[in-house]
Length: 383
Image (tube, rainbow, N blue to C red; front, side, top):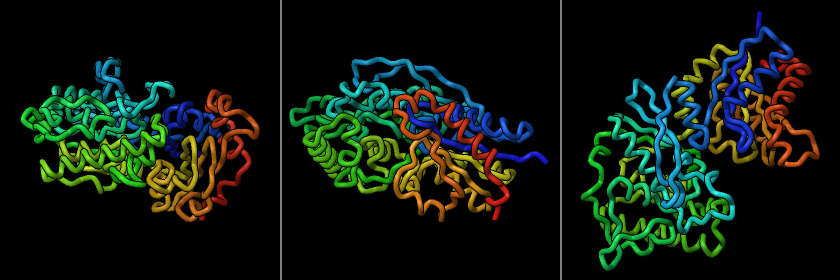
């Protein structure tokens, strides 16, 4: 009887989408077992690839739009998704305000903003959706969601009653908030945040300290950004009597999680759990003999809500073996074997450059899967 494999990887950053990773895995398996049944379920954890994974899984459609990029002066062509008979919109904030949209030398979280994300939310509201799912990974912003809120009608004013400029570097100028123009449709719309991080807004584990440097912040800028976010949260608590800064995930996407909870009434969920639920992964794994997952890097952080961990948890409950493939296998993976993983395999040959590995990731994933399937006695995996 043919073996059945569920293929449920995340994207391999900068090299493969989750869908392309599924295709490479399938080729590797069928090079050995041509009659193998492969059920592809591209997965994401709220970060990059979440939108495309859900559009694929739910047979949705892409809606093109033009919005502001990381800098308000940029206009970019992008898209969001509609699923569930056009009643639910899926937005990936990185499609408007993602780190991949700026070269490293251009990144400056004092000035980048989430304005474009707010514009995408407004475009979805214009289509009459009842629910919006927003994936928060991959941002190049650190503005606490203030740009998003401005796009939806909130006014942030300084001591002279003038509008405060966009960006995380200007938040300390805010002295008052005017909600009279806030889009009333938000109150009738279910907003769900899909996030892969649990960081609060401020402090040593907050948005600025943990993620600021990858967005272009110097050590001095990190201090400014953290102080400004704390001021922003203080003004909101004083003016609106809303305190969300310490909720796990408030620091996601440079504090966009915080802004969405405050101004859009959003509820936050584990991104990978939400995607697993939407794609009906549990029902598909129940049919499988083996489960393959993976992403660009697997290490001690994988257990904190990353895609392979979420997949392994489902498979463990169903007593299915899980083989994970990664471009880079880092430190601290030993405990993952107690958390549902049967094997963790690096796909890259030794001593190749990162650039070469990224450029040829699909080939190396296919080869690694083929070699594993060819050489391993799968029966040993079944306990």
